[in-house]
Image (cartoon, rainbow, N blue to C red; front, side):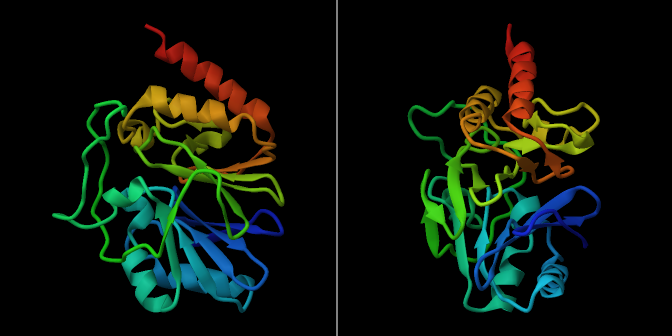
Amino acid sequence: MKLRNFSAFGSQGTRFGFVNCYLVRESDSFTLIDTTVSGGTQSIIEAARSIAQEPIARVLLTHAHGDHIGSLDALAAALGEVQIAIGAREARLLPKKPAQDRSLDPGEPQCKVKGSFPGAATRPTHLLSDGELYGSLRVMATPGHTPGHLAYFDERDGTLYAGDALVTVGGEVHISGFGPPYFPLTRLATWHRPTALASARRLLDLPIRRYVAGHGRIVEGGPELLERATRYAERKIRP
């Protein structure tokens, strides 16, 4: 796994050149955001050790697609006493079948939930809600790519851990469902594009200084980059 430190608090781990996870420094431990695909356990643990001799205390999931939870079960087994957190809405998509629940709530767009949901045997220890502070990260509800997708904002350095709410392939900020045509992965797996756009608009209120996503490069810059992405998406979504 390729590791890049981008601030005093954050490091990006990349597998296969386009699947990212993130190690966030806390006072005495790491929070891991997403786990990439299966087979990443040892490289993630070694990456954390290369930064500091501190444990991974929390595994924080943005959503339940397979390229974000693929190594969850193996990591949970290897780390032992570790907190596992996911959004309360998204948690219904985390178990393996037949416990997995792909039904939609009244008031949600009644579109097919897209993407790969292989499920995990690991049960979350904490169900996250919009606006709460978990470790050093502010929880932001960003439905659209999936019904219960969450992003996380580090108020210490202005980093937005966007998961697949955004994509930064090509070094630019795009809203999932409206990404570049040469990278169709997030676009094809996005549940409801208008909801993804509405979630992105909400993030404009944050004092963002850096964008890091599930797929793509680290992009330095402020809310103006996201505002540009929303204008592009608005043009694409008009009938």
